[in-house]
Amino acid sequence: ETTTVGVSIQAPQLDIHTVAAGGGSRLFLRRGLFVVGPESAGAHPGPVCYRKGGHLAVTDANLVLGRVLPEYFPSIFGPNEDEPLDLVGTRNAFKELSGKEEAKGRSVEELAYGFLQVANEAMCRPIRNLTQMRGFDITVHKLAVFGGAGPQHACAMAKALGMSRVFVHRYGGILSAYGLSMADAVREEQEPAADIYEKVAGGGDGEDPSKENREERLRHLAERAIGALEKQGYSKDEVIVERYVNMRYQGTDNAIMIQEPDEKDPDALPYGDAFRAHYRREFGFELDGRDILVDDYRVRAVVLGSVLRPSPP
Image (cartoon, rainbow, N blue to C red; front, top):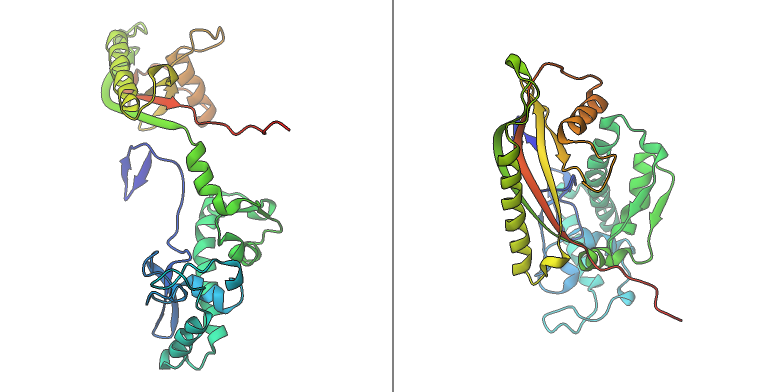
């Protein structure tokens, strides 16, 4: 659940912050200022160095500064896809830019470096929002880097953030492809509700008036989720189903997602007790005497991804 302009939006999502600054982000000089993105040169035509009549991009700046080495790339560029990266053409494009009045006499290298500084700061900003803006000391953390071009920016970003260590995995360049191939297949279903889980106020004795309706709706959502995965070619026997109830105290907006108790676990708490425990841990108190309401029902169906195992010697 996220809040955008004061509106709560409920949708299956991960808490990931992104920024429009990558190797394809285009470079501009506007009124003497360095501007990076959000427009992208894309993969086609791509940056100038791709030899397809593209636009100056962050990759071009890295190439001019020697951070991208053409000899380490295959000859797959140009209209016939048989040429190496175009360092000469990229330098000429920066020379043309440096000749404009907005460049204020800066050299090719100064322009390229200036654009990279702007790109790095654009990537540092969301990291600060995730850490310093939430009260975390960013200097005690390490910067984990992945992606083919991530290490080109990592040290400069770590210095700007005050971080002393950078982790670069040897296979960081294929992390996205690797993760996609190993990821779980997930289908989530959700339905809004306006049910009472525990009736306390007004003389109620803590009964659960929504039990039958809850079980029926969760069963229906599970069937829908499993059916969607079966259409993707998975077997029903592979699917693991997790059921959730989004609960809150009457008169509050702070709903908490509670997973269905495991019948095989003797220590598992019923929905109501688990909600009160979560609420007490998060807010430090309980609201005795108030009904517990159900805002929505959710089901998460998962087919576990494959796991790589070491090959036998």
